Image (cartoon, rainbow, N blue to C red):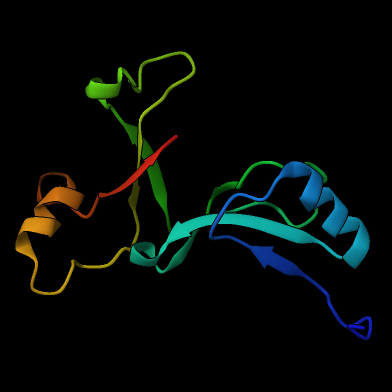
Length: 123
């Protein structure tokens, strides 16, 4: 149906079940990368290696991104836990400068006036 022309597939937006990802790799017979990002980070922030045989993770940070976990004491998630837990925060030139005409919202999503963006996601 697809003419054998698919060379690579990249998925994002929502996690794909590991079993579904493995089935897709067999059906399409091409590398499938899984990534993580948000609209506010211009989509991609992480991506798996295209030749990674494992499924079920979103890979490491792209070369232009830094990622850290920030403590969420209200959930008892600390970056010092073993393994570390917390809110995923991203620093990158791809992170938006701010929400248009929304200084209150901007103060909520950026850490202390820096370009570190609070995603609201827990990792």
